[in-house]
Image (cartoon, rainbow, N blue to C red):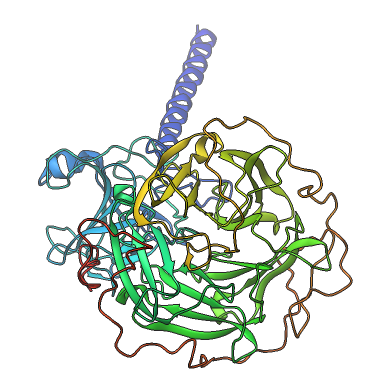
Length: 630
């Protein structure tokens, strides 16, 4: 009996131990799933901070900086029963996961790019309206706002909007964060989302590590008024009557049927030839696009120069008059220019694309570094694209084709394609433009003249850059027309096709739409029914099979060194030998580039070349007030 009892006791103990172990396992698995014990192999509990992809077009990030573990101290449940639950639906409170959990005066970052819609200093509230639907993010209890954060300001993902605090009805310093879908002044508009790896955002969730590094949108500088809609900038270079270079900005929000601005700038007239090029970039990171006027030939410095007009005062003053590392780049179409942030440092960089007569027999790209005022190269290399000539057969635009935060080069072949259609050949920014991301025909027929110009922008906010084909002259409407080919279906249909508020803008280079301009031959109407696929013409557009080395610009005229192979590759970490140190500051020649001390207040376009909207702007300052209060 004693032996039987001993066996029973042993079996009971084993069973009890097994049950306990099972309970413990289930418990810890549950904790791990909820994030309470979520640890990676290094024990740091690190997780990806992307929110669930239930909002197409948005990629929300945690509102605090990388480098420290955070946790949730009040989650969904507490906010559902606390003060004003109808306005705190699905909100969470974040604090650092430390012994004394306070985030006092730590940076609070924008979760996603958008426009500041509301600021309330009493409770430390910021509401950012994003570019998709009615979505907003709500931040509360900030101790103070970052200088320059005002209602109407455009902010980028990761941009600091203030510092953490405990203003308003608060238990202590923390970041109160909420996603909203709808009017934030109405109850129950909070939107349920979650952090990747965590289905329930409740008190005790730890292991939160931000990846909100503040990498900016790489190329989108065309939004003049911060409404999330790409606007069309038309630069009237000569003959407006103002004696200045004028800018006319068509409003993307109403499909370009009105003007956001029609102003003379501080820049003198820039003529009709190719001695000047134009681009947009946020030079001083104030969220407003600045106008880059690029002086290519006839400069006093012997260099290609930048004269950057300030967007915040409607281009009435200069932010910079600056020579670059580039020698003069001529007054023909051999060089094309663009402005984009190649290395994601928030300083727009200058892309100079050497199209023809290169020693590598390829189109070459030279990217001057915005961080040092364009005195060194970030990249100088031959690309996978062959020689494209110096005429108007090709346009070049920079945008992020594949959403990898690296600007890609769109080479737009307008004629001689073999497919009978305008084609896109997209060079891959992530490998230094040594391969192609796409060879794609579009809905547009070939257009072998100067009546058309191009840009690439995301018209409908689907993260697929769309092709803007701008029909300048000989249109049936007698207006400048825009045809927007849909990037989501490989440019085979139009998202919009119609006349704009701008009159015809001619087939010469008097008007510039931030692209190459050469003189025309004949005109063409876009084709309504594109072909579906195309093989690029082998003579003009065969990618190089085996690229090899980098290109070193020559010190005097910017002709590449004579020794590179016919197809050249550059690693992004390798830098080239730049030309000798250029002059650091340039005083423009007085006849071509003296800023006007008292610019005219409003420009009335010539009646033969531009018809303004029915209610044109009467003051250059009135056009911007709805966006910003500075």
